[in-house]
Image (cartoon, rainbow, N blue to C red):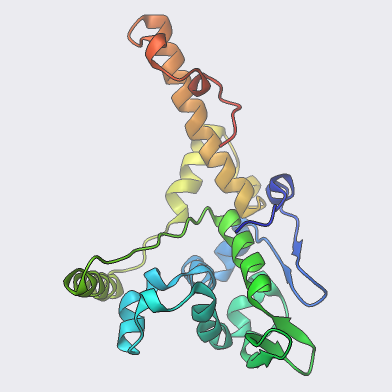
Length: 241
């Protein structure tokens, strides 16, 4: 489900107001660097992850990842999110104060802070994750298993992957992207520092499209590429990403 988040507003880095209690701030590249890249993407992952992303950890809790919904996973994770970690996105909102309650009108579980009147139901959750996924280019990957053996293999593969990842030193995800845009586009470090994350990511994707289009055009003119065999859309570097 998508909620028609304005991509132009995303590009200009506008904050996204969901209601009087929740406004999501889109950080700049510089804010992410100052906050801590690993820490930042860790909190984004915690909020936007789906059960398929947590197979082994849910299994450790005796939960089958295919028997729990995205929202039910969020209900488990949200109260563990510390305000000092979520502040870069949600400001003063304190997820640790949220408790589970039953909505008497529809008998569904919601998270609420009775002191402030903040309520996070499934629709609010969907709006939060829809926005964050659009900003960060996240596309959820739902995994399923054909039988119990496949299920066990998938769980063990993830468990092994997490074990090795924990032993490896952190490698910057942003550094090669920043370097690429800076060198190819001629941006200064200060310019990149002040870009909103969506703008930065969009610029990088656009750069890839332009380079690919230039190469195709050069091949067409040189006669090494058959224009009849390529999608004419690929020659438009201003196309939608």
